[in-house]
Length: 499
Image (tube, rainbow, N blue to C red; front, side, top):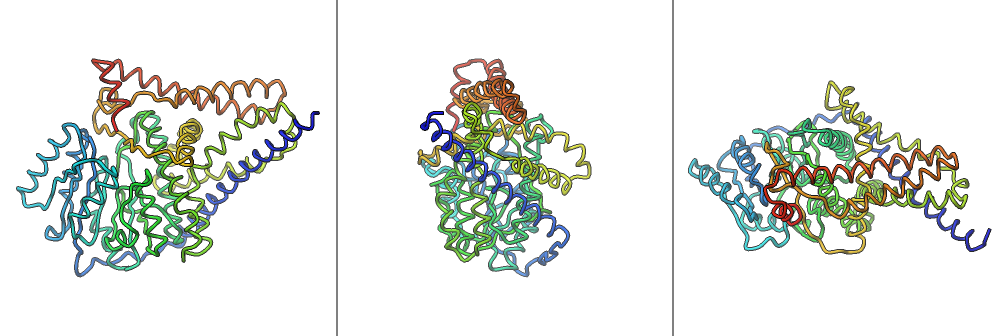
């Protein structure tokens, strides 16, 4: 064999091995969280604080942008909260450019006439997007505690009475995060799969991190902040697409604690459309990677300790795993053709791949009595996470290359049919990438079949099906939208330009 070819095979093998090791390391961090969950589940802390003698002033901030389908429901739920009226104020931070503003104004006037301290705040521009809106609202309030809800959430009446005591009881607690529930988990297979993944994140990961006092994230909604914590950490910033994760890590690096309350559930809407799900995932992937770049090194210079810093780093690296998977997919074919794959023993990856499945199972077991029936959707969850690999890899690379931010919101549809909504999204360029992955994986499957490499064949077939299904589903959804739309060009503008 040509020495140059041998050198190339060695280089590709080293890259392949590095990606495999990174995936195994991340799976190991998940295994740690599973072990912590099991330990703290058997040794629960019951230090639920008593109601405070003096309830602090609270401002509830509702950042919205073109949310006509859900905004009335949100305002009504917040207005019904059981909290001392002389200690409560509400800010509807409205950046809308459509008729949402009229709906907001009507509800605000209604509740203001009833004696509620509620404001409809509009900025001259959308600078900073959600982070800018939250910062603008904070400038117009002196409240000691800030609650934040996205437009698609419905907080329970006693939300503040359940969460605020944790901030009053412990001066080191700066953030309290509730568990996300689901308003539309049964809408379709996509929402069912997402619900299982969200349940795992909160019931297992967030619970374990909070119980072991490891860094965890504020989810952007269904939580409260101590004002002093926000100000000490530097306030809301718009230099990442995940302003919630950014501020929560800055706060914890400064020494503030974040507490997760699994018993406080706040239901929210899950994206029922494939394109909307992909957009949400891309925003989270890019924003989390931006936070990794900004805060990864700072974790080890903070006072939180080496192990918490290491677990925080693993948390911020979570979306880097998808470029690693895609790289493995790309490299497997040339290594098969060159014979280099035979030199790599990666059987340990199969063992580590079981860890997420265990976490998914425990998450359902923790929350539902009928968890065995719910686990029937697990294969689709695995399939979905594989199908979104190209979409998320593109977002991670955008973060690593320093591409400018463009906040592309996830549309909410409420009780309306999403196919006929002006907020529904058409397909974007990532469909081409998914089709490319499908073709490449199909080619790899034929080579693996010819070489009788069962492991590689299974790998290629799985990703060919996953990427192909993601692309086809996106295109089918787009076709359903254009069939509902009276004017295809108008629908295209709504789909591609709604930000």
